[in-house]
Image (cartoon, rainbow, N blue to C red; front, side, top):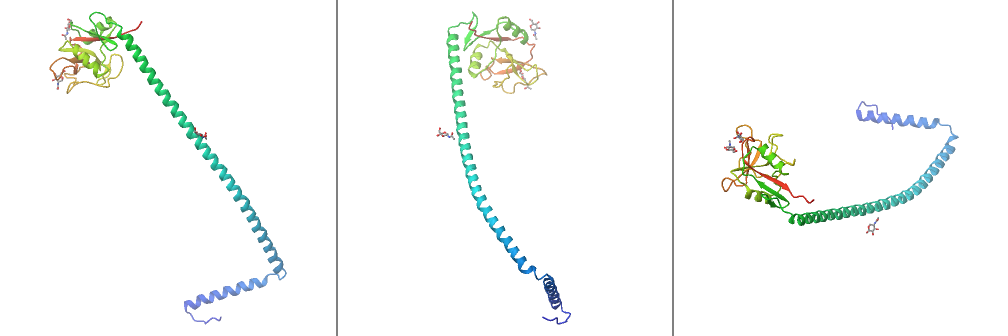
Length: 251
Ligand SMILES: *[C@@H]1O[C@H](CO)[C@@H](O)[C@H](O)[C@H]1NC(C)=O
Ligand SMILES: *[C@@H]1O[C@H](CO)[C@@H](O)[C@H](O)[C@H]1NC(C)=O
Ligand SMILES: *[C@@H]1O[C@H](CO)[C@@H](O)[C@H](O)[C@H]1NC(C)=O
């Protein structure tokens, strides 16, 4: 095609393409004529060899891949099954051990109870569960009350259950009895005299209130019907009756 020679943009672009095509044709014509068939032949040979190689490679590697994938999947399945079985076994063993431990604990408890039933408390002490309890008629401050309990191989009472609280309530001499409860080590952190923290509490409404500054010792109220057996924090220097508890021993 010939250039129209106009200044129009479209025709301008068209002209440029024509020029490029002509240049490419010129370059092709410059190649040495002998290379023509030889080079094409070589190229074809290379392509054929390359394709066959690729085909062989694909055939082999896809078989291998399939084989190894199957192997891997089988190992994985086996491993998961074994792991499942193992965790089942561990769980079963654990459950059996727990059940045996519970059974043993219960047997020990039964034996101890049986022996304790045959044991009596000293005169003046009342028996409940595996303990003996003493209620004073004298009045002393908390520390002196505790000393008195200790001198008798006991300590101020530690209440471990609602049943024990109810039993001890029946003993209260009143109007206020010291029990083994104190927060003198750390204000607000009530502990039993045996070192155990207080978990279940029976504080009377609004107690402990540490009224007039410092009330670090626990007492049980006899008081009115609603407050009977409930706890209050009191000034440790006050003189009260108190309750001791002594665990039964089996020697
Ligand atoms: C898992 O346990 C079952 C039943 O006891 C058994 O038949 C199977 O062979 C075990 N599998 C493995 C992988 O150990
Ligand atoms: C705190 O408790 C005591 C009993 O220990 C009681 O007499 C007093 O009224 C209480 N104080 C307040 C502010 O509730
Ligand atoms: C407690 O009793 C002792 C001995 O009888 C006495 O010396 C002390 O003053 C009393 N304490 C209080 C706070 O009443």
